[in-house]
Length: 506
Ligand code: ADP
Ligand code: MG
Image (cartoon, rainbow, N blue to C red; front, side, top):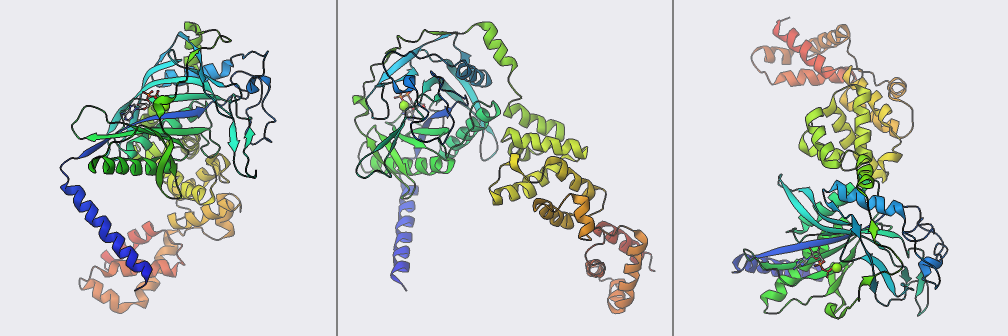
């Protein structure tokens, strides 16, 4: 046995010992989680200036005097950002504040040249709303949204590419963010992920955020504590900053919950602090301590008037709301008769739901067949190629063209998969591929009967056994006929005709 193997064995023993302890332990622990999500609003210009928000420009080419905090300039609020925040508030059934206030959050950091970040503090634009999440075992749970406020993003420190120095890129400074703060209603990493995904789906439906997590357009800070099950008081929490994927969110929380339980079980106390998740080592470690020492000295920004929204404005925004994900999911179940699972998958993004509905419309029905093909064949191909649905080489009309050929019996389900692959590879539409590759199914009863006669004549012994009561041989005959047809006979017809022929005693 190699050293590697021995270490693994030892590790296995250790972990099973540990889980044995876990089941024995007198206290069962419950996690309490609240998320702060930063969604970058999809405006073309910044929240208080006309500079562009486009991603990926050369460093420091998209920061103007306002973003840089140069003296003598004044911020001007971007109405587009306000409208997006209002949309979000209305979509979660929150109160949209008729009056909200921008405040200065003061702190020093090299990527914050003004020395303060403009945010909202005591009077945010959105207060109190609810989001429903679907739980793993079926069932639903409502999660409270405490508030959502508008703020500007800071710049970015670049630690690579500079020897013993840091670079500062201020392109992101002043980019509009909506910070969405949840109540501490989440009880497991899985619930936290379901909630984060729900918010992600929602902001994309509303077209207020592109949701691109790699580019930092959607970032999650996770607050987590543990407490003995049944206890009502909250434990001391830690905050894990800047999680930029759902997988990292789940892993970081699972790890942090275990860490806190170990601290408490060994008689220690959890320290309130900010921690960073390191995906390479799958662990969290402290980032800043003395959280309480942060004194942001919030005060209303004297350069900006309170934001006052009129009823008519709010109602105009309400009129712009699209059909929301929950409503659309429910409609997919009631109108198309889809299972809840399919409806959930197909409405996870507006683009996917639109694609699916276009396929059903073009086929003119058969919603379950359409759902299977969109989720399994198309979904699989998109995943493998890493392509977004909007860039799918097979559009909804083209897919519908193939499904119609399954429905009218021109191709078998199996041949249809081959046709789909060829369509994906750009070989043309379904009909052209079916002809070019000779995939047309034999549905001519006369031709199939002829094949059946040949097969029966070629296997007199099996035929006698079948007649003597060996029913299992039916499958054998089906297989032989399919083989004789080169796999092209319509299997349903083969079954029917064969049954008729054998039962007729002919
Ligand atoms: P802060 O202003 O310091 O960030 P908040 O009270 O606004 O603190 O809470 C921030 C987030 O932390 C919210 O999402 C909230 O639900 C969550 N939270 C607060 N207390 C706890 C706790 N004891 N355990 C887990 N999460 C918590
Ligand atoms: Mg916080």
